[in-house]
Image 1 (cartoon, rainbow, N blue to C red):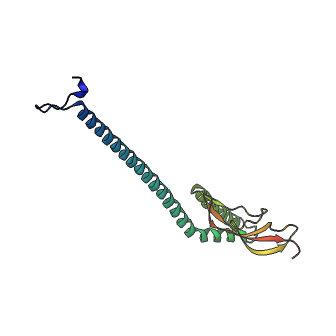
Image 2: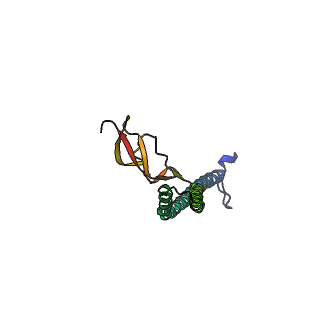
Image 3: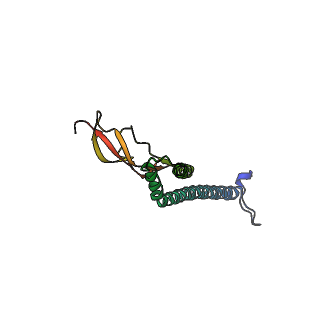
Length: 171
């Protein structure tokens, strides 16, 4: 009698066929467990990436919300400097230089936050970045001639369009 033909004896011995069936079943179960573990690992990694993206988005939203609150103050300072009278008094010059320094500090802070000013004058009009509020006579259509209000982006996302006048042939 060879080993593969050995059948269960009356003493309760297990046959090779039974052992092979049990081994096959155990291997199948191990494969299912491994597959389930891999799915769980992938789900966990996807969850981590999603939470990281949400965190980044929340930080950007916070930057945006804070900047929007400061923006009117910055606009007012820039307008005050732009429309300041030309006075030769030394005290006035120091005051104006102080305002210029404050604006530069704010500009440095917003750059550190990832916020950029939109450079508009001399560029082609882009409706994604500019808001045309006036058309003026010019040699070329759609060229930004003057900027009335600065526009800003946060890592490529528009926060506020630049308000500009654009050139138009034959007005």
